[in-house]
Length: 267
Length: 289
Image (tube, rainbow over all chains, first blue to last red; front, side, top):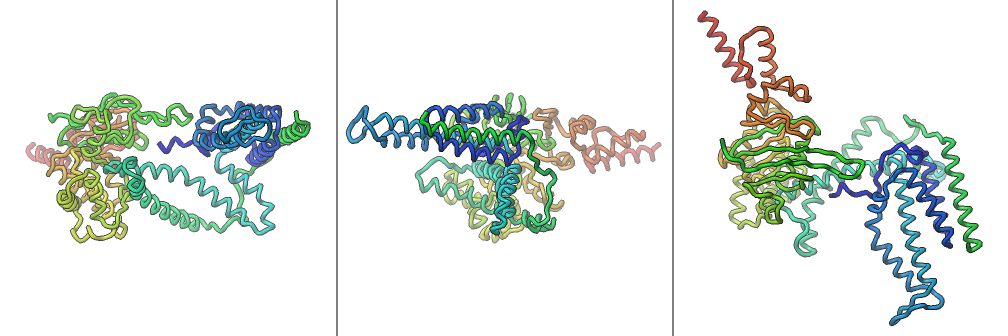
């Protein structure tokens, strides 16, 4: 049921990709997205695609897991594809009623679909191979310079890691409440829209209550352990950039450069 | 022996099959629950108890195997699933967290209402269920969130009892309560059993409670049924229970120690009453000698 949600899930592993510094991986994803949006030719897309495939292979992520994560996006992807198909300029090769399809339209549609799919797959690579704790730690370190601008970086990171930490707990809790109400004969998939919305109340009210209770307990527990923000806190595991991180970042930069050059020359 | 009302046949449940998180929670379990019995389901944390009981009212589907309610497979059709939900009442761990209505009365009425019973029947059942769990009439009109922890627990159990299930399954119904609360909730549950002759399945860690109340016990270990039998039979395997990470009742420990010291108590003494009787018998035997 709810437990099978893959969006944003972490698959533990010990591959090179898993061992990369989270900061490296976040930056790599940024570089990857830049490269993806600079790509304007087939060859450039191919290059980005090969890099993605290599990363997936190196992380030993099963393709089925990737595709499963894409499932909820099918509608958006198809819609974007269709819209782009009919908005191409140039010489039409087919037309009916008010629609016309051009060569550029087809090309645009394919590029757009590829771009979305590869964008999602690339970001999945980050969450699939990086544990939520490492991810927020990496973000905190990357955002540290913003402290100069009085951005509460540590607090934001703490909030994020708590939110991430509580997602599985809340899913589990929701599962349990649904089961408990089902055990009392509740049905969630019958009736019209209003009845269905009403049927959610026995789930939402207990869920809200327990979220508040949990937040309250967590705040007390943190205070009891003298939590007072990020000032002077140290880490058990301090991150260090390794040679492989530098190498990976260089490869990422090279990818962006290659894509920009390829697109510039229209290859 | 009473005939079975629920029969579990070769039940296996695997979570997240085909992912790195694959976990076999229940493995080839055969178990029957007989009409009018009190069955204690024992096992340490993660032994598959909670997964197993959620199959009993068709909340989760077995990966393989069947669950038969009065001889009919409960997963056969939508109708049979519905019938199983009504016939088998399941009280989850910490059931007070599922309360949601404005008043206790409305919350207890949620189950019977879902069964589409007539209004006066619902009213009768709510009051009866409240009586079973020892809730006063005036509590019924209060908001469930104003009640004490123990009263919330009672209200939640009443919400399942109001469906008058033929099998009442409770997952750790006494968890987190004080000794007086534990005893009185257990007595409430037994009064439901006595009055309706429903079968009761209690999931528990407490061997002493199982020893006191159960007619029969089933011990789960790593998703398998390791033992079934009367408490007497099960507790005679004290060493095996301990090897599974389970405790034995205090009196079983005591009798084992006495036997080791050469005191001639019988080996099947597992409640305080029986121990008292056995020791008295010994004492009388010595006086006579």
